[in-house]
Image 1 (cartoon, rainbow, N blue to C red):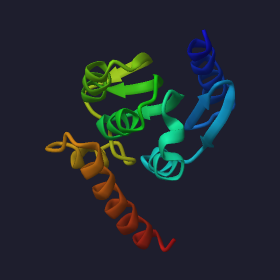
Image 2 (cartoon, helix red, strand yellow; image 1 turned 60 degrees about the vertical axis):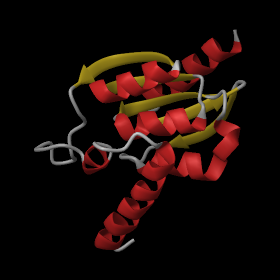
Image 3 (tube, one colour; image 1 turned 180 degrees about the vertical axis):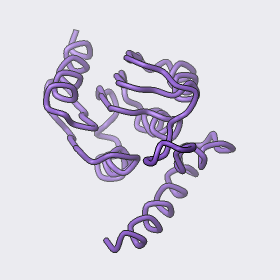
Length: 148
């Protein structure tokens, strides 16, 4: 079964080569990133669009926002090293095959002292397209703070 092999390839590269996000479809790597946060999956979704349909995605950390992006992209299967409870709910509702290593109530921010700002964004959002716009705004703001 192609899909099973794709998720295995994605998971192997993610864990073996220290990637943050790996997306595989029909045995080919569509997207890889070592960058942390929501940006890699946001870029994959905005750059690849419909190409992601039926792909397998492996990610180090999946919160509700990343899960909603997987839903929007119509990926077939997801592996997460760490996944939030809300992300599991989203993926299970969608019927996306899910495999994970660890779970948590919510994703922490980078300083590990509170909820991830993107996870907070999703609190009252259940529509992936609305979330895309909010994440686009969030990334613009956070990049301008970092000067890049």
